[in-house]
Structures are given as structure tokens and as C-alpha cells.
Image (cartoon, rainbow, N blue to C red; front, side, top):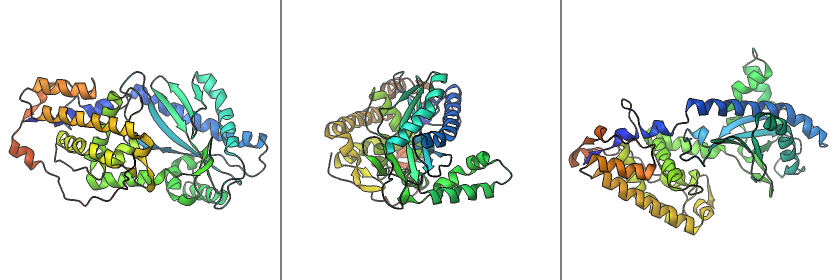
Length: 379
């Protein structure tokens, strides 16, 4: 039997798949610079433009919170030239048209129009592209390999004012802008979950709070260990190589993986094999949003999409199991490059021979009870 783990992840050897999934410094720097420019542009422009559109209530400068895979630390670089890294940066405004527990009285279209008008000069200056077709966000394509999605949220004025004053008090030696930036993460955590509303181009406003999913995922990482986060990145990298576009959403892969994942001591290859062996059945059984049992994630993908995903993960299981049980290291590498693409290190000389007994000993480090993640028979 073969031990392929160092080709997935190693603290002493390079290259490894995990490292090759990271955005390079040359990719990260323009993304971070663009994100900050977008934030600054909207902080200055949104209050002015909302007033120009007839809104007379108090409008403070928005606050921003990174969401999605960048917040979970599961963001992968694109696997193919036609794909893009997806950065989610939520924009929060305290608008007086947010009622206590009901929909805002001002249409979400005003919010979208103000945001897009504020961003347009910057977009033109930088040669970016503003995509106004996404129903839940403003998308700015900043390069061939990355875009930044800005979902627009509304929260009650009094909550925002309290948070801003607390932030300034905690960092009184800084300017207000610096204080806000220093305390954004704590402020985001403190927002009331039942008052976060997402602007939607077609459905006006929807109750939608990204924090519970992040809290859930970080809880799963704490329960399983970092090997779980790495395994999610491997599964996502497989998806990005196997599907030129589309495929199972990241939240679906996370929710399907969490209940069935088992840690394997220093054996990422075995942990991944165990996971992909169980994923097809998990997908076919149906998977719900881990923080909202009423939302079926597999239903969103559709029956054909679920069947396609299940078959591809069965394919990955066959190739990965064959590689681990192979006697030829070159063949094992060839099979995994086929499944993960050229980012998988083709270095058979680093593969170690191991025994069945040693493989059996790489059992979960600790037994943990699997929480029930909502499932549905749909999809």
C-alpha cells in the first residue's frame, strides 16, 4: 500500500496540493487593494447618493464584513483559466427605512442603484467590469482570475449607531475610520441575527444573515481539526477541475461532508478517501442548509446535478482507492493528476510504502458524536 499524504499536505515537504490551491502573492495583493478601494468608494459615495435619490433620513457610512470562503479560510485559486476566485464582502447600512421586524419601506432597488452609481467611476478608472445581473449582490470583475461580490444588507439604525459609538470608544486614539476598521469583526458578531436583511433585485428584501454558517463551519473545524478544513479544500479543488463551470456549491459540499468526516492521523489521503466514499450517498439522501433545515441544498442543485456530482465522487473514490492500493507510485500519481489537475504534485519518488497494519492504525484521533445535519429526501 502507498502513503500519498505528503502530496496533499506536509509540514516538511514541498510541493503539496494544499499549497498550490492558495492564491499567489501576485494574485492576493490586487484583490486586497481592490477590496479596500471598493470599500472606501462606497463609504464616501453611498450616503451622498442615497440623499440624491430622495432619502432624507440619517445615513451613516457603511461597514463591511468579509464573508464566504475567504472568511472560512477555504478559498482556492481558480483551477482553470475560465474560472475566478470569488470574494464576498458584505456591505451593511443603518437605514431608517428598516422597520423593527418588517420589510424596509424603501425599495431595495434604491440601495442597488446607489451602490452601482457610487462604484461606476472607480470601475471605469481601473478598467474593471460591473455586473448588475446577480440578484443578491453587486459583482465587480477586477481581473481575469477574480471578482468581488458585494451583497447589500440593512440593519436597524439604533443598532448600527450603538456599534459605531462603542467602536470609537474602544479605539479612541484612532480616527473614526481607523476605529471602525479595527472593530469590524467584533461589531459584525454583535449584530442581532433577526434584523439582518439582504437586498434582492427580484424579491425586494430577504432575511439573510451569513454569520450562522460561518459559526457552524468553524465549530466543525474545532470538532474535527484542521484536517477537515483541508479536506473541504481538496473536495472543492476536485470540483473546480472536474466541472468547467457549476457543480455542487461549496456550502453543499461543506454540509454534506461535516456529518460523515473522520479524522485520520497524519493521513490526509485516507481522510479524503473515507469522505468521498460517503459523499455520494449523502448527496443522494439530500442535504439541508446546516443552519436552516427548511432549505434543501440538494434541491437547489437539482436531481440531475446531484446524480452527476454523486457519480463524479464515486469516480474520485475509485481513483484514490486505486492509488493508495497501487504497487506503482508513478501510476498512483498519474491517476490523481487526472482527478485534481496539474496542481497535484507529480512526484512519485516522495510516495512512501506502508503496510495494512499501519494504515489501520491511522484511525480517528478521537471519537466524536456526529451532529445531525438536516437532510431531506428532495433532490
